[in-house]
Image (cartoon, rainbow, N blue to C red):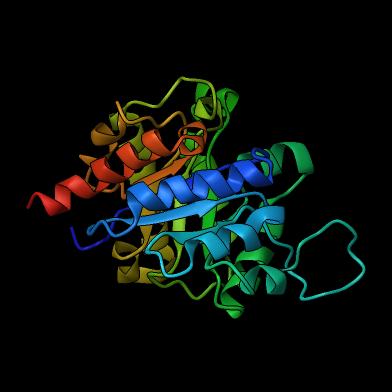
Length: 254
């Protein structure tokens, strides 16, 4: 497989400043320099500058958890894409928690993706179905809609990352099995192929939802799964490093 695996840690609304600095140092100490995997950490926006300083010169990349599409303006409480671009290389867009709790939509995700690319920030676009949608056998329909909606009018390149995060698996301990995850991610890749052609084979698609060091190898064994967007396990350097090592193993071991 030519696609370099990705392990991205989404810290969500966790860590105080001292925690963020200590966690970054520990992750850098364990994850700096592995070949065959790209490592990203996404702290709360208030700690982006602190984490960026700790990662200077490191192979560990920095991402934001969200960004507003406008460059500047009267949008109290938002963080603009231009502000994110000052410090971060990646940005998570359309996470299910943003959709569920803050009313974000495919249209707002699309605006964020376009703005990120304009400012040379690499988007990690999240898509995924709820438990009710899966029960109603609407998974494929939802994934196609969210993927098409998020990428409408976007010039797709290998810089784009997509994360399949079934809502029912996030933070629940109920991880999708590898066959379920592979089937869903194959739908996403097929959809990208229908939109943009052969570049779909270069787009990295991650699985997210109760990923742990004990199950990451199962996902990495699947042909369309290129790594993980990690929640809880990214808050401990030891477990996050184990995920990075596991993602690197298929390539580094030949």
